[in-house]
Image (cartoon, rainbow, N blue to C red; front, side):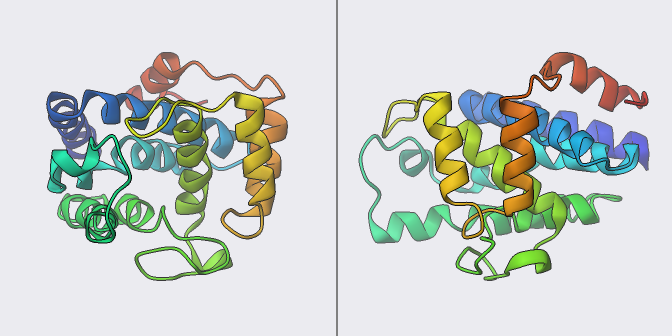
Length: 206
């Protein structure tokens, strides 16, 4: 089952790279940030691997969204935004069909939930949101803010940190934001995506 999960993950990543290289690179960075945060939280090696794989695959459902919407340079219409909001469900449908991916698929499904209950697709709040999904939310939004997008330029890292802190307790789990900003972004925690990927996929202990 472990081998099936790894091969399925690598296959899905290659598919995403073939269609949306930028989205694939974003997912690899998100996975790295999420893994380091999981380590800082003292999660077990098995939990860290689950967080990492969820980071790699959280946006796989975007393969089901028309590229004209995902790559649109201007503001999305209300209808287009509703289409984009379907991607966590699509991710869940893809991942939950793979043996051993149950918890990973749930992390992908709920990574756009908000701590205050105003997210999507289910409107979960607080600790009702799986921890892995709350970790992904912080890592995902941080990388999105410091990356260039079709509809806006990237934000300076310092400004992105301030935005995370401003939204702690509403959009994000405040404890995770505090740990992420203090240790992962500002504290020099180890973040080397390619080495981390090798460790996780090879099954070596952190």
